[in-house]
Length: 146
Image (cartoon, rainbow, N blue to C red; front, top):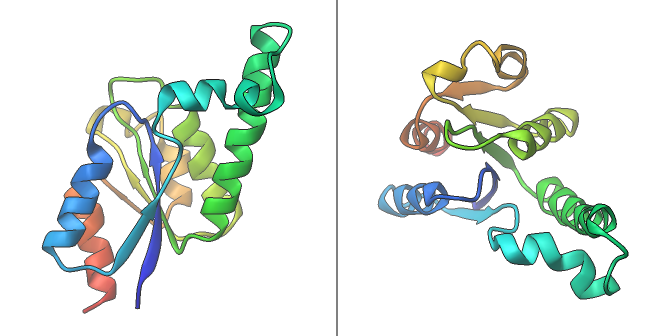
């Protein structure tokens, strides 16, 4: 049984590669999807499709519409959502995606460092499981197959 896992969270490091590598090592039948990780494409997709916008507000708004559409489609098709909250970047998109997963009643694993326990307490309470590493999240998924 193959499961589709939506990997929500910041796009500025290789944590998704770590999840895929761990899944491969554990021989887990998983398909990974997630937000657009090409930052320039994500920022410019509105203008790429709709044409030049009259200012940065409209450029961001057009890109947001298309990125949110993409996220909604992929998340609705996912079996599991993993939301990683890192400590380097603002985590607005991660919080939005995790909240969407809760709203869609998708099984949700939150990964967050210890220093974010307090600020994420309500969201962690809504998740199915909260862990501190990608490895722990993959172990939880591995447990499904045991």
